[in-house]
Length: 455
Image (cartoon, one colour):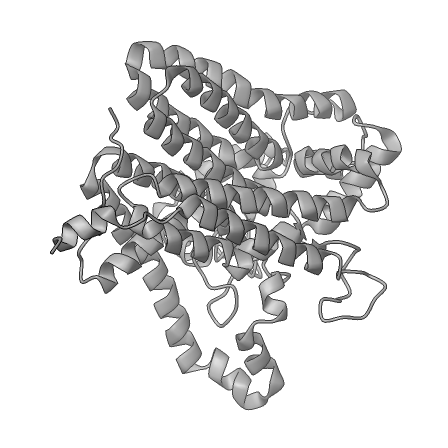
């Protein structure tokens, strides 16, 4: 009789890539049905006052559409203030898609974002299945692609879905590079990743730090310091080209030499003696002599340095807000238009009766919210520790994921606490949480198989 290990080797291996592809296509088709059900003129379960045909509006949706309309009306050098206050990258992407038809451009946007999201989850999970983390890949795939908030954000007018997809694709390509170890393909993957991080910065400038650090670690390990420094410089030039075009646009339009002019204002909302660090503060801000954006940035940073105790309290609050639930007594941020909240059972319980509201917002609801928040952070840390201890390629994957998560959290500390800022890195955070939770269920035993090494 063949031994158990021999029978396992002889049994047919599961084709994860094909399974993931079928799932990704199925989810995309379901989203197509939803997209074509969203109509400002029809009454259905998706209709709300802020709906437009083919998409839901996100927190800044009206501003992006105002920018898009200004670009249509005046051209790419439109002087409309909304295009310089918010980064003009996302409205410019909508303008590009309008080539396919202006009347259904938001439908096109939702379809494009949903297609990219499905592909990104497929690529990341299928490459993960080629590593020693193969036994985690299926659960990682399901929890990312079926996460209601993250998945449905691809049908929202907002940059969040594109950026979340970008991180997943970039991580997938890095894993693919180490699996293949083909120097010719490395240059191609580096070019693609540099463009991806450039586009991410194009729509949300604060993501540039994540992109620089991720490519830096990848290049350094893959090519060493001497060759890597030249490749990193080339990668930086490619990535920075995209935000540079926004600076050029703003300079030509309004004489402004910035990607956008809202950084100082946003930072100031989360600072000050009476601020809480979130949008719900009744009083917030630091009194600054010069109201210009660059002056506000310096003024707020100086306030943090001069008030370390108050700054520490605000950083703590912003951490809680960044990781807070989407709904409930501890929720804090700008996710009121989260599509998931349209059908969330918690929302129904809280809104259908006084008793339901007391349950959700009372002591039990607060306890559950805190457990959710602490468990989420704890699983990320635990998952990262496991990946770090595994070493080799898995250590690198964990490092990439943690860079994306930690840099976005740290940037929130000096700006404002908002759980919406967590969306771009949700794919990475969910990945580490899956590693953590599945290992816990296996009583701390890490499930690994043979896979490629770093070298």
